Length: 118
Length: 130
Image (cartoon, rainbow over all chains, first blue to last red; front, side, top):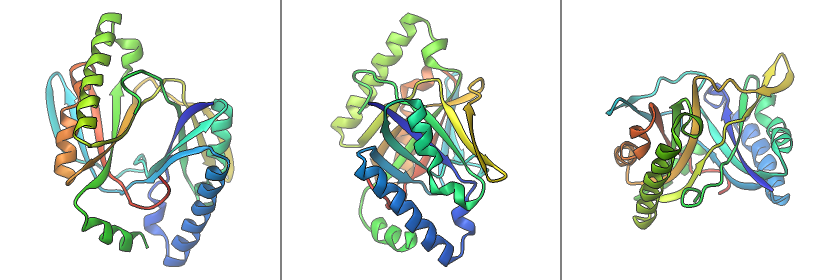
């Protein structure tokens, strides 16, 4: 089995949901996560808050400031195990975020490097 | 629901943050073999310090070769991701007292010496599985 990270870009959908929609959304995600756990495919699932800061560095100068909250913002991630990239993509496709409208999931293989992975 | 859990959580001392590393280009392909070796050594030292201080929950470097799943007009598509510009090179899941400390941890990342980098410091919502 290989490890992958699925980065979720949901365009800030959660922020525009009514309490009922949010409730439904949490339920759907809950059962998606439960399924992955039952199948032994989930290592971690973490939603992220929309506010944060950016540290940028170029030519030795490091600055920090707020992020611009664009649609590109990552709303959360899943650390999964799968046979290969194709299976990881299938897991991404089953994500209930796609039932809420626009969204995007970036599927990335984890690199194994001694002393780095933790 | 998020809010209530968040408020409860906020009263605890440490909070979880995700440091998302975005680089212009890739250390795997853009650095010389010698510089990549140094990069990995510096990264290992940075990581073992964070572990000693009890600040690191997870650290994962990412390979190139990603796919992206998008929905357009109700149809799910997947395809290769354009990695020519900025890519997510990896992430750190850390704990810190507050966002200022998380930013300081991000600033200490030795990757800034090697490649133009932006690190997004995201407070994590304390919901979902672990």
